[in-house]
Image (cartoon, rainbow, N blue to C red; front, side, top):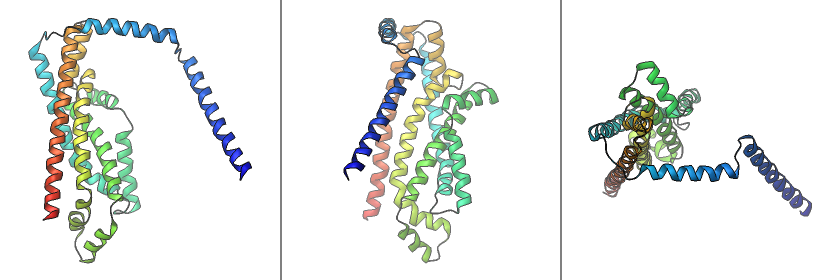
Length: 265
């Protein structure tokens, strides 16, 4: 036992030594030095000082951008949930044949392969500037996230309840309604509310590349060096995200509470 333990200890130390050596090598290649870090802190403090006090130079433009971001997030979340629900069911290996799950999981993997900004650039090039490109971008992102988590949640359910419903001769959709959904609905509501919150954040980001929302107003203010207006927009975005989080939490508690009451009845 002692030699085996010694060999394991040597392997662990060797792995740590290789990892630390690679970190040092990467820092050297990327020119990540302490002097640059200190200089960045100084420049960052100077930039933050130019942001205050915040000043709303164009209130109509800012409010329009915030409204558009909220609309993009809500529409994208709604459409994303509609597409993710059947996609997650098709990707569940305990419900579908292997060839079906491979196709569904391939679609999910494709949706998750690229950052929303990259997808937004593609849609902006394909259909032009505006909110539609942002909506389609976040629909793709929602399908990748919710579809994957929903499929994994279905695969973790108790198959006994599903088999009991199947034994009655119920059709496939009745099996889903009575055997699958009751076991995953609470988690699905959590996935959806989190994705709405995520889409609110991403809707501000995709606007930087012209896909609608407050991001375009933010980027334009930054290019004009209107840093006080940039600060006002950032504070408005933070307030929007906090409000969205509170509303999502309230909706999650409301829906899960109703479900729990129905089960108890």
